[in-house]
Length: 240
Length: 107
Image (cartoon, rainbow over all chains, first blue to last red; front, side, top):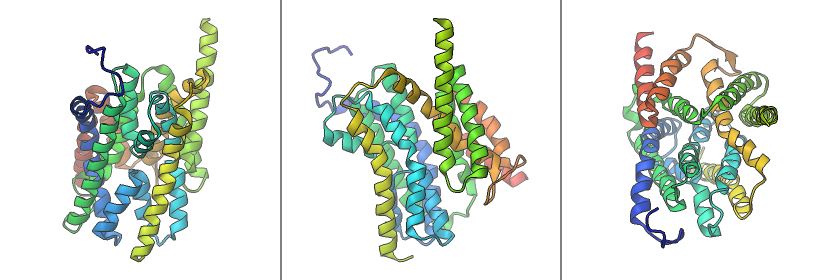
């Protein structure tokens, strides 16, 4: 940063906004088709426009919202959906833990607002930039909130236009998979990451065949990261 | 499912989603984390993303069964290569959707 007199906590709304927008637009492009798809499916499951918007605003976690809609369709009660949501979104625990390293000086109010916007995508984008160094919590917060606006807005649009869009149109069912594939590519920063990804993928598939629900995601992730960590330790020891 | 139910559902889902996002920020942001823990956390994103996407590509149905013939899986290969090549999140989403759409019309 050129202006060294600027303290990190100075309110400088113009630059964080512009930089945040620049970082957030791919997330928005990713979210809009998914939000539309969610709105369409939720509308078909019998949710009103207000309920769709409320769910996107309160939950802000795509995959669990899709799961909720499919469970609603299958006639599920509230508690199983909430428990499944908890299991599916427990992965954010790990993401927030990683982000905490970069948000050390932040006050509790801002932290609480920031926490609301931690998603797979905002996490991947913000962490990548924090790691590069020149990233400020205000810019990261802008990324979170822009992504949130795109999510809520597009799910409302999907809910409103839902009856006009046949299911499966425009390959909309594939948006989430394509997004995860690309975010996975972003995370493949070396051989160790590729091995960890392969282990996690195989474990997740095997566990999904054995266990009910979505427990396989968190179990496979924790096991694969632990195996990768052990490999890193062994490698470092071999080097040293 | 009436309105009160959906409201309760959204509130419940919102709460259990927010807590895991908030607790680590609240507890961990004030302190320096040990090296082993940050090293381990460093591998979590790649593991999670793979664990999310692989069952989606390789399994189908309920209860899930291995299905290696589904278009989802075969569209993933060019989509993955496209992501590697362009490093564009938005572009990859659009590319994957387009390809899946076209394959769906042909198959």
